[in-house]
Every structure is written in C-alpha cells, then in structure tokens.
Length: 191
Image (cartoon, rainbow, N blue to C red):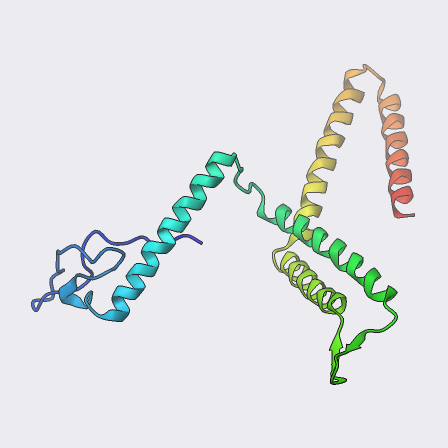
C-alpha cells in the first residue's frame, strides 16, 4: 500500500474561488479554516500520518534486510499459486485420513474439524490465485516466452548449420534431422 501524497497547500478555496494557499493540517488535505479542525478530518489525518510512518518503517526494514523488489509479478503470482496448491493437497491428505469430519462438544453440538476448515480455505485461496493468473494472461505469456526461446534456438541452429560449410543438400538434411528430433522430444514430453 502506498500512502497518498499530501498537498503542500490547502485544497480549499477562498470566497473569490482562488486557492487557499495556507498549509494543510499535518497529514491532511485542508487547513484548519477549511475543515481541518473537524474531528473526523483530524482522525483521518492522524491515520494517514500513522500509515506513512508504518510504510517508511517497513521500507527501512526491507532495505536493511536486502529484500529485492518483485521483478515479474506474474511469475511471483505463479509461485504463490503453486505454494497454495501444494498446501491444499497436503491438507486434503489430512482430511482424507480423518475418520470423522465432525467432533461434538459436551452439549452434543457438532464442530467441523480444523483440518477441514483449513482445507476449504486453501481451496479458496488456490482458486483465487489461479483465477488471477488466468485473468492476467499468465498462460499466454508463458506460451509467448516459450515461442521466443524456440525462435532463438532455431536461429542458433540455422547459423551453426550454415557455418559448417555444408552443401545445400547437407544443410537441408541437417534441418530435417533436427526437426525430427524436436518432434520426438515434444512427443516424449506429452507422454
């Protein structure tokens, strides 16, 4: 969360419609004459100042710890989705191992076991993360990256084959063999 930038001057206007020009209250957007003295405005300004102080403190801790910024948000989201799915599967195994889904208290009121509740939460979290990946085109992006990598490899292979000083027939045969090998790799990957 980034705290909203506070103005240097009050956002209020005078009777002529010109900007006020006075400094706003600390953490606020208006001076005391334009509503800055109201309890709700003061409270909101105090919350903004506290949030700014907390954010600055957190940034200082992260800088001290050497935490790096997220370079690729979609990739990080993919990692989160993988972790959430792994947690969901681990909790699912625990739920499957339960002999009873419910327990009963001394008044015979049923209670769902904690493992079931945690499993349900993990399912919801996994669903939200996977849905977010779909919404943001993660799969299409991965396909585009794979296509770019394939084009790079194909270009390298073409340049190597051309640099070997082979005849046109030998170059054509080398490309046929490479294509067959790549198809075999693709079929093995599908199996």
